Image (cartoon, rainbow, N blue to C red; front, side, top):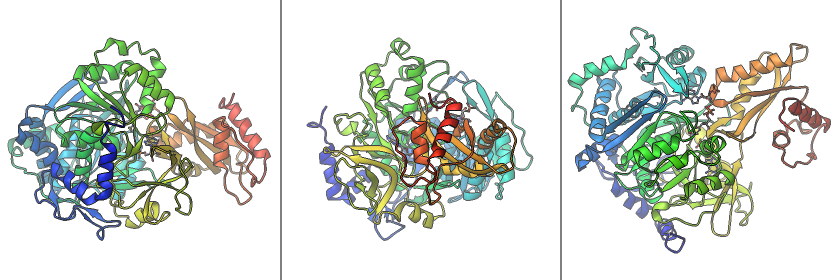
Length: 640
Ligand code: COA
Ligand code: AMP
């Protein structure tokens, strides 16, 4: 299919003509308890609210509805865990029973009710998905925390969303390594001011967690008790379309993460629309998003999107390589008959590195497989072309953010594929009026780099606000470009309206598809007793896209071996932020290059480290410092 047969332009134009009619129509695909009479109220919330008088339940739409429609025996979740040697299928009927039971435990045993928060700190096991849905069932607000974060990060989230209960597991399994979760949870609760009343712990066979009497409960024991009474008693609780479904923390420009709020109604409407029109998936088909439920991609496209659509979702507890080899993705696709998959480019870089000829690919039958979707970081053309040559199927880059919850710009397979241009995630989705502007919010000419903004309002599914921080929402996203949402990405648009997303305008970096704040890392390094000042920046990495590198200047009089301090800095970031930061490079330097007004020249250091062409900034205070920095990088083997 090409641009002549794609319905994209017609559909996008219809949204432009009448956004309310467009989303009102899309809302018909959802089962409402009370159908919204108003599609959008521009006066409600910060920039308006979608479906303000609608009443619904997300769990009902993701589970019960399909059972009632005759999909009870269809697989809802296929759990495939090479790290434990487990495979299991959960039908929609079984998922309904499971969500009822867990919802019953939350409500009756722990007193969790509508609006209460529940933290889910779990590995990629089916119980984690059941936990999210059980919260949705009773109108509780879940907040999933990624397992690769350190206890301190978990503590920050506990204090911010003050959960009544935490659902966790004894361990996660990272490749061949067992990561005990419970000691991290205990430490986090120890650090937090807010103390959750209940913790429900899934004991996995690999590690048995110690339970603290009074607070901790054994998942299986509670489950067995609840089996007697919880089944078939807990009907989904009606919530307002605008009530929060979840809070998902993401990196901001400081060490304090932003709690992105997702509502119930708009979220369902947008995700349901996207499954068919963007991803081209039919109900009943098998879909795989190889992300983690701790990230937005996991929320939207491991859990809610496919289940709202009545598709089968694969829950994969493994890595692209090493579990056991670089053929793992092909095995999963072939074995479960996935028609499409969604992952981050970094996963494909990992596969390409281990199996550049695609020898393992040739061993599997991928006849059902139609499309590969990539997002989470810029899809570098090399990796994209490699994947295209291997798969002989469309490889679709698409661009979105935790904040938006779904795609801002993509290539809508369901509406008919548009021509692919390498390096571009293609075009704006309906709901997004994308502009590229200069500092004064004036649109720049086609082909010119600028800040990418979205004209308000944001579409259904995008964040209405930050958890209990309306002011931060306005200040972070809406203040700089009046009337627009600031994506904090920079890029340009070409003559065909294709968008090119080239990088962030703030200090967020993207490490293996994981979003991290270098500002947050600097705050941690500045806390080291011997560090006077520091700069952390993302430098190019063949596998992870970018990795953080920290330059530290020591306080005067400190004469301990620099190598010791560098190791301590690495350990400190791992302790305070977590292994997910992939912080392995700390370099002690005598001075940092600055402008005459004292601003650290991070951009120039990055260019030197990345071996990109650079020029001496006119405002530099002392040019000799750049030679010193270059020398220090060379000594670390960073530059040839
Ligand atoms: N629980 C505990 N630790 C975790 C974790 C989790 N859920 N996820 C990652 N970690 C740890 C890793 O074990 C690793 O620890 P180490 O420093 O002791 O080795 C560290 O965090 C960094 O993880 P990661 O950046 O994922 O690197 P990796 O070397 O383990 O794997 C890839 C590299 C490319 C294979 C991997 O990053 C990947 O599959 N990425 C896909 C990206 C993705 O899913 N993105 C989501 C958005 S779409
Ligand atoms: P996250 O909130 O973790 O999903 O990260 C969002 C950020 O990742 C965006 O603001 C971009 O900087 C980057 N990103 C995500 N997808 C893409 C893409 N397809 N192309 C370029 N950058 C992307």
